[in-house]
Image (cartoon, rainbow, N blue to C red; front, top):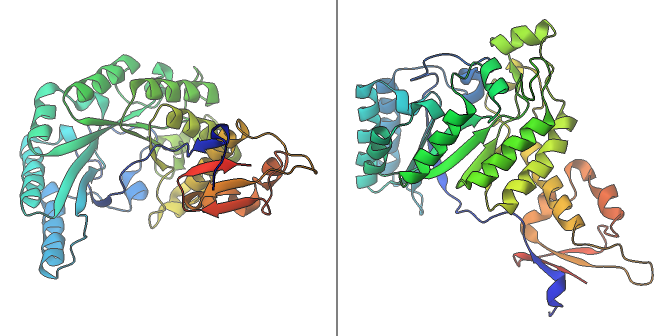
Length: 355
């Protein structure tokens, strides 16, 4: 099937290798202070534990997989999440690096990644990660807005975050950036969150050209200082609709910069729901945001067909689940472009074609 070149356009989402992650959660480990929004046991589904105990459990599990022949054909990526990995006590940091090296040498782990804070990276620690086979370091930047960082008790400035991003990239490690749109103080106010400020964060993230990004809209979780502020009327989180209206354009802006968005919103861990007091959380938020981003992308390229000359869109089958939105929420928008379920056809190619 041949199409005019002007009527063919690629999928907007940057391609990224699909990897199987073996997560090792270390809640609060290495954290010098607690941020106003943080409740890591609820966010990760894991209770705080010693590094030695966490590594021992992971060792036992991986040995079991190895012994039973349950090795994935494409191997695993080991990921140290939670806490502040590069601020662990020296003996714990070394134990984690040794664990990563050992399982890479055994052939079960292919890549290793970790997450940490911008004020907990320096050249020696980054060199240690690189020597131990780490390939990606994700920085929990959260925002490049100084007011938001101050109110959230992050303990570093926007310039500190920028320097940390540059340091990671110069070390030879891939950089990941985690943002938390909707923080208190964003846009210069302690009580309201600004979508304009959040979009500036996205634009700055895109300009830094990280290897990947995550978008975690701020939630009010039980047991956090933010929960107290919310109960007292001092913080107003985004609604789900506000978050979605931001996340669609934000996701598209990152895609246009070649930045894959590897996570939107917290994963639905056991017990998370009962700890969410307010804010834009739903298990399908990521799919909805990507569906909206796709609509915005296609709307720029599609003209409305007439009754005498309707248009037909051939779309990659990979987009079929997100295309129409949750419960068909995007159908009226596509109808205004002349698209309906009758003239959108799915195929196995990786690009869109418009007739």
